[in-house]
Image 1: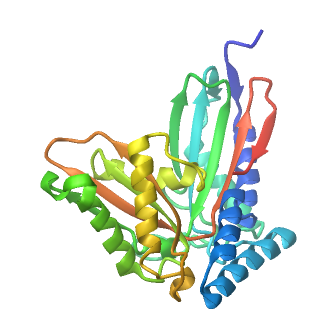
Image 2: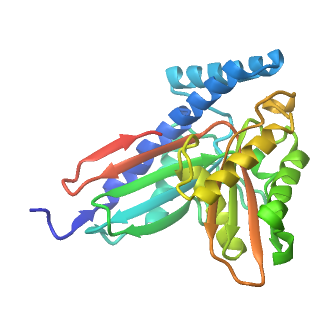
Image 3: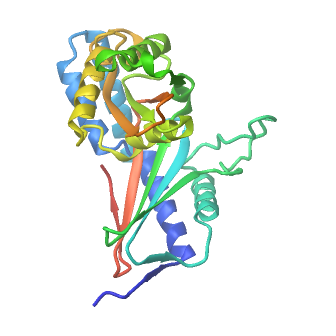
Length: 302
């Protein structure tokens, strides 16, 4: 018989964050690797095919040498899901995750890139107020604790775009939303280090749309299909439209500007249509850990 509750101790949580942060820093996630391989094999422009091959070689070297996949560690987000019966033993997961990120940085797996937003002073160990971002959800239908870490490059972040549209801007068949996404990508050019994955958040209020966009590309497999048929159709149409722009890998032209589009949606107020387009560069640095009621921790990729 399983215990009524499983206590998660601070030391265990710290070890989990350290392990998955290191794993994510040096490994390109498996779904992104396969999508890059497929993109290379079907790319019709030889120079673009060469760029994709270089990206794959970079990922192979990083994994073999246990060195960072990209010189920029990006910004860390931790997604903590508490299944039925899991209880944190009186510690702040934000604080413990921050200490773990600093530990992994001091070990050389992450470049220190976190700075004060105004003074730009570098903390030298990726520490700082509210770093990393931690989102906590309760999943009573699950019999496990799950921790996901996702690093997203911030060069790509520079080109993200948000708006709160009036409802008449949606247009027939979401044409206004499609236009907003395609104009955003076209304006970004090669800046976000394509091929990218786009996280698109639609609905809620603006802060919810931003979190939906980030979560969609941080948690979901990049090669999955949205379980909502309407959103699945919109994702496919947007991906086709983005690749039709011809920007190509690294912005040099070609068939592969994006690997996919991931949409997160929330119902919204009748007066507004918030939308956020968030760019994720091709280095997908994500890892997850799962803990059962036995206390055993297992580590997973994508």
